[in-house]
Length: 225
Image 1: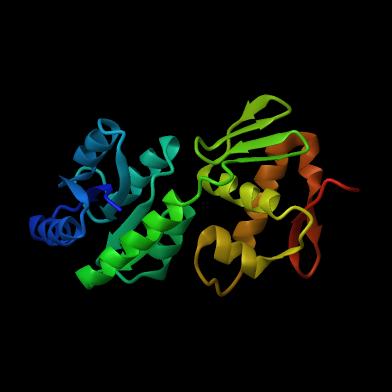
Image 2: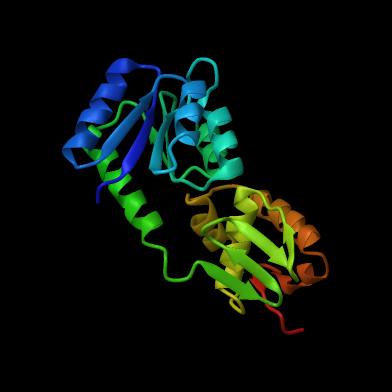
């Protein structure tokens, strides 16, 4: 699997280590030393398949870079950080980060994570269009239309709505929603799901009623009253 990967880190030595290991595994690597350079290189190359993105950088940090990219693209992002703060990890998944790795790490483990993310994201293809009750979702372009009218959803709102439609008629426990949409085991309050559901319902208008609350369990997307 030969993919073009953008490695963003202000430490030259770190970029070289990652570059060497990825190149040995057949990937093409583009490097950027700060957030502004990362955005310039990403927007000038449509063939980038994955981004390895450090958080702490000059000019624009990793969070800002991630936010900007997620406005336009769902390219896989692996976030790197020197801190082991859980709040950082939760924010990363909220912004649509696919993997989160704390420094120091084994380059071999990083390469394994890269390969796993690429297999997962490039292997979709079977069903890129999801449709139900006049709601049409394109998983490649992240465009949603409701009765023919395009409606804008954030990255996580899109992922959550897609998960609901792909499991139409099935009661989905909160733990399953968090594990499948946020990609982590969650302990504590799960108010974040309720907040996203409320926003999605509002954007769907009359069709928001199809996202039903299953008390004591979670939610279910069902078009039958």
